Length: 109
Image (cartoon, rainbow, N blue to C red; front, side, top):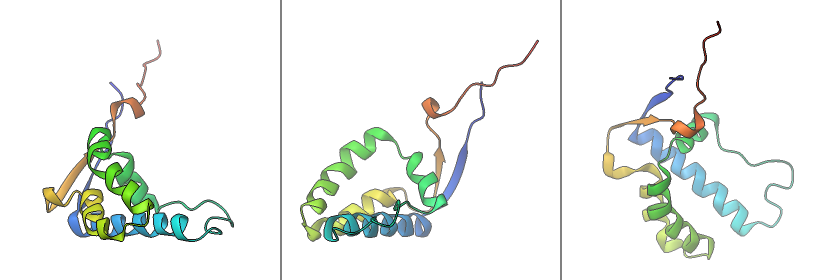
């Protein structure tokens, strides 16, 4: 069946991840030299959170706001932050890694 990977993230922690994402996006958007010294990756914990983000929710809620933000529309930043943090769920949020990212474990003979 494979190893199910799950974690729990508090709203305050998710908001920090959203701020981290927005700061990185703003860096790419506003500074031509951003990332010139190497990859600009998120923290390990933020990366884990975003890897478990439901793709359909990301496409429906985050991408439209992200496109506007990329076009220098800073008025969407609060809504983008809420969408990235999934604020509508409040408190603790259980995140399970997508099944397609999990590999099955086979028993040997």
